[in-house]
Image 1 (cartoon, protein in one colour):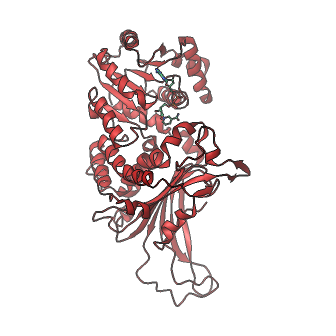
Image 2: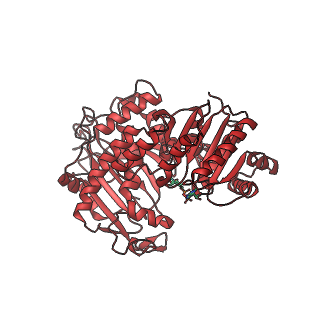
Length: 495
Ligand code: NAD
């Protein structure tokens, strides 16, 4: 464990992310003693707030934990507000002065974390000023936390990375993908590598296909302006889905360490087949929600949303098939789908195993449900909103005659346990304090994910077609079902 004496400067300190996620997470770390009394936070943004106003914002953002007045006050007293326009060089001088004062007051020994919780357009400007204005002339560690999106294609990500690399080394950069802070994502590795029964059959001899679904019930909400330029492919597939895929597909790391895992994830991403344009058209489908109902509530179509172009070609849904060209996975499709205004919120992974070589029960099965094929064994990993896993096996149905029936073995973490586990941001912040980059994305992963996604995007941009519609409240357009049907398969999760 490293020393927790640290000065954290949050750029975008008045923003939504800071209030909803960062302040509550810091409070939990403070309560648990992961942050001791020698820490200070500077919040910066354009608004001219006083420290008092800022303290009230901090207290409001942790109110749901019901701290005592003293506890809330003690915590808030570590926060300092500095109005700041990130484009104004002289403002960094003021920030430096405050930083140096706090450094001394809290015995911080020069340890600095910079959290860039603002629009990515500003990342380059901020980091170059941190260096030029001497904010990193201290002897402690320097780390920068960067929010998504990291670029909006390979070119822009590369340029951004170059800018950041002028100031921070790769091991000082913590690129957030908050999915990697989720308990169950980290558990993928536990299920695989701590259970002989799975890791020994985790390959193309036993696995028929893998399905990753990341469904949102909400529509674009107030993010329409951003979303209309981005779409589901860049918003979800480039980061969360490819991260999940690489954790599922990677080879066992030599050790469960940052370096070991990263190296294997990068190799897995590098093995994903780069499609030609025609392969993209065959293997990826888009969708755009039209009006519909979810839980008796009516929702308008995407093109009728505020701040969305009425002729928008932006996809709010993607389904696709990735292939991984290596010994372990050759021939095993990884189907993925994600979208807005789907039937219900949920992220889950289904690992569908192959059929037994011969169904010896074929001729003994009688009764109304007679079927020649057994059900496949399916291992499901539930990521959210509930966490856990289940395994579907075949057993004999009780009674006369012979009939098999699928039986589900299930383990779901109770709501109680989930409530008490640290939130993704809390875990990730603690990782940064400890200097552990395992659950952050390395540049090589970002770069390869963009190369894969760019290929798909470029084909779609060239085709200029309207994505097929799907009514809000369904699991995507019919094309998403046909994608699997033409391979003789179907989506396991059908909410
Ligand atoms: P926001 O719009 O709520 O906040 C932006 C902040 O930047 C505000 O504090 C604003 O005052 C400040 N700002 C804007 N221009 C400035 C300037 N010129 N100088 C100084 N400050 C300026 O945005 P947000 O939702 O908090 O998101 C911040 C980042 O986090 C984005 O990169 C976003 O993609 C990412 N993110 C947010 C969430 C979320 O839940 N809100 C989730 C994942 C990722």
